[in-house]
Amino acid sequence: MPRYYFHYRDGSSIFEDVVGEVFADASLAIQHATKIARELVRGGEPTNAAIVVVEGGQHLFEVPLGEQGD
Image 1 (cartoon, helix red, strand yellow):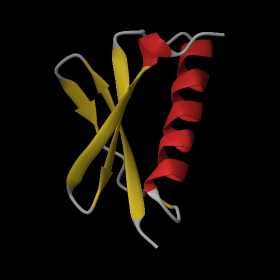
Image 2 (image 1 turned 60 degrees about the vertical axis):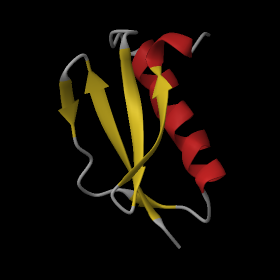
Image 3 (image 1 turned 30 degrees about the vertical axis):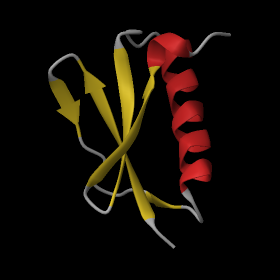
Image 4 (image 1 turned 90 degrees about the vertical axis):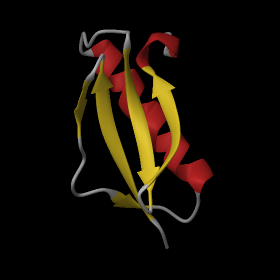
């Protein structure tokens, strides 16, 4: 199963996830990224940040924190 990495991007800064997590497919990884984003928004993180999902060195998608409503 592929390992997905969930980097945190805030403006021009990116904080890399060096551990990652294994999921059966990309749809499960995006669900996980959305959960992370919602938790960060609840914790007061800036809504202009995003979770960047990477697998196999490829940028797959981003989950913007600003799109995570209550």
